[in-house]
Length: 207
Image 1: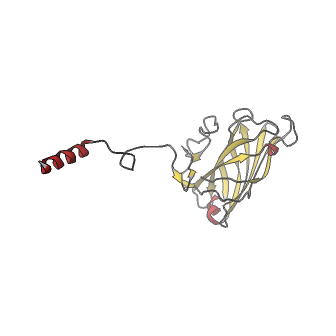
Image 2: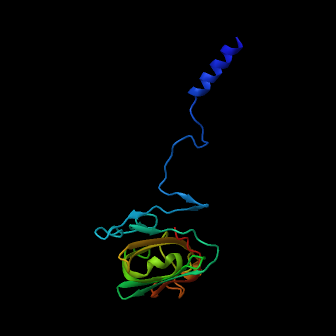
Image 3: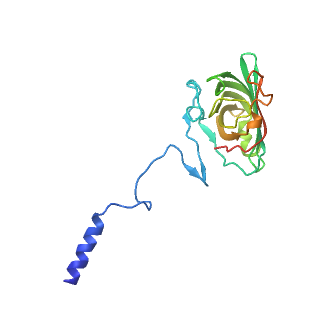
């Protein structure tokens, strides 16, 4: 009887569903990299730009061109962001440091998307070195979005995306997310101020 009992148990085990040890199937719009979440992106091309749809935080604010840079953020607060109203448009300045010798300086002019929440259709200039060197060129598209409406002294999360046409003729995209401290939002204290954001010590995750 013993061999027959063993055979029955073996058959039963083979018919049971697989557990959660990697044998099952699953999918996600974002993958994990060293504990950091890689943002979901919208495909971008020169014919159909990523910001043709009004962007919002977590929705169509991050896009991906034919060549895309994604670098996990470093521990240092060595990045900066400035957003200033200039007439009917908005000037965005970004200073990025990947913590491994790569740096980027980005300046772009954008139009308003959602009031005090998103800005899009950016054009401008980018300069990069190291792993960010392929970003040197003209900005063909850019967006910056905030999780909540910008209010004086109110912290919020944000994200940005740019697409650069570099000297090699390649379209290269880069995006990132960050947390804005309250003191960086309308530092003058009033929503009528032209200076919307002034942050000089950010940690930007470039993925």
